[in-house]
Length: 441
Image (cartoon, rainbow, N blue to C red; front, side, top):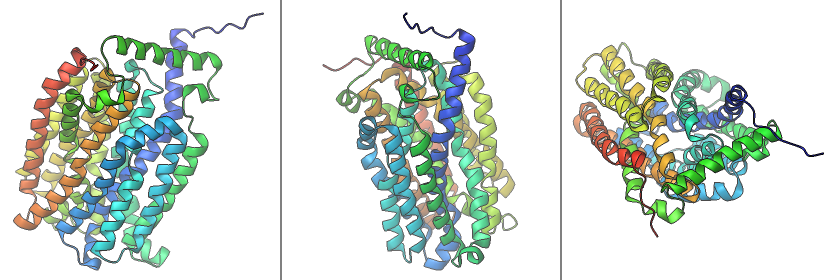
């Protein structure tokens, strides 16, 4: 007697994708939350750490930027390794490595040791973001990527909402709890938590749908078949399939420049927003108050991302990215000319909401023109180039602040770069979305 597998009806299929999302996104999202808390913690502790170690704003900016040297260099090799060894092992390895380095950062005693710790952290954490973006393409076809990417990227502003109170609490009580300076306890606690999340990922995360024990054989067949058919269709219509094709494609590099412009403002804001708030108004300032207030833009961004994702699925990926990107630039221009602390926070809320809403929609575009090994290398390349902003942005912010005594020119520079990136997106992005790039021979 033959054993037939039947494809679930549409209602069952919709329920299936949601069930997959609930099983996958919280796990990889938790890893991403830890990574963004880890990146932002330098901003949370900048003021007390600077006082203890005698650091300038430029040195804090350099420490923030050094993280991205290793991150940029290892991004593409890391995604290739993820395809070879599997997401479960590789993502777990990344988490455990950077957790240990973060915990060790609690022991830094000078600018030099801080620089070394941040440099090592970049190498340890490299590949996480690009790896997760690639991993999601192993599970969700194109028609489901708008809402799944939005759900996943909600973890970035969520990390600020979680990280800011955690940082404030440890800055206040860390000395009593751990017998060390509050800012040192922050690095120690976050490092240990990251290692624990790495262990959780190793136990619970399946590499591919065919290995998910919580799926029935028919469900595994449906997901794998849908993704395979989509990959064949993309290749037939000119999508890049090879590693070398993606790395040498002008359109892939142009999209990397566009994403660089989208995220350029995130890292200066992550590292310096508490300090910016303190400098604008003494009534809003203080180490703890400014850290807590810096979480407000992230809370607003979560609402904006949910609302925008519902509309974005009905328009092209380029339009869904360009509109919030323009709003983000407008918010920065408003922040540039705001002299009041509360008006500045409102303007930053508009800007951060726009930037965060643009990010998940952007990643719909590369998925149209890249598949197979090209997706692994192309996604990593785009994310790697964008991470240059993490090196350049914080360092320029600190240097400009030291030179001018304020952040006005920093915010104006970020807005201009975002507008230039918007121009690239509206030209090259539309071509990638509408007319697939010709494959090299």
